Image (tube, rainbow, N blue to C red):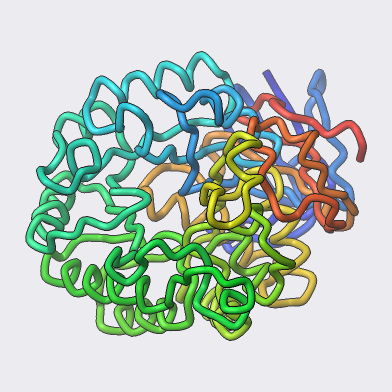
Length: 428
């Protein structure tokens, strides 16, 4: 089977490529790329004039909810939403029911993903049994079953000795640890960033140091364990600064930021609306500026959605009664183009670095590139198309987003996996 993409702007930061040309795909593999790539006889072609041709996007942080919370999301719908959002690979967090803390659940997620036929799903294993923070999970068994990383997702391992042991074990297995950094004793039921907005609404708050204390601790532990840690959803200026300093000191660390955090700040919250409740919370305008700076200078390596779908009744009860989280797979690309590329915070190449090349590097997988011989996972993007966010059209079960009704720029035109068109937008 042959497919040729013609006349697009090829953006492949892994190969320092940003030029007009084509990509020839044969039997699911990239056979040629660049100005000279052309379609042979009997070849399906895609005219990519005016489009970006990028490696398939990779989301390091997705909640698929299955097993146990299928009323919120299923692997089928999450993996399908990923394709619609331009993602060809997504990493599934372990806070399911039962928790992904053993090979049996890892195999279950793999089987569901194979059955779904959507984006590739890479399970992440829990650091501790049942995410209870008492005993390490069967990490060796999960590594053999094919997890891509370990995480206590949604919480931090409170016991520093146990955390250090988990880091050491992950290092021997050659897998990174993804960290949700939050000190619960500093949260105490908070639901919103500590700010004038929280005081105005009379809501208990979450201070920035709740995040930063654990970032600092885990960076120190990672240095002693000599293992790669990845800090999830950094939201504070202090968190960016700590990661920057750690990298300068040689700590093996990377970090991600989410579209909702680089787009909104707590001052944007219109009132007691559960759609704006997320963890970490929306921080201050100063924190958001630090996120932009961290993205621009390379301190922050990746952009991840933290896609967290919920049922409607779980997000319509105001801040105190609503669940934390935002459905992010189907709005991420447009938010990136609108809020980062158009204001020139990032170049298109820098954006693709953080959404494809760097995530692949963090995971240690052969993806995130348009190299000849690579698997043909490709995302075609119209960087000029205006869209309106309508949650009711989401493929995901989760309609919980603060961006409903927003006009954004940037749309997925086509998602390709293994050389096959698996999603196409008919409204180009």
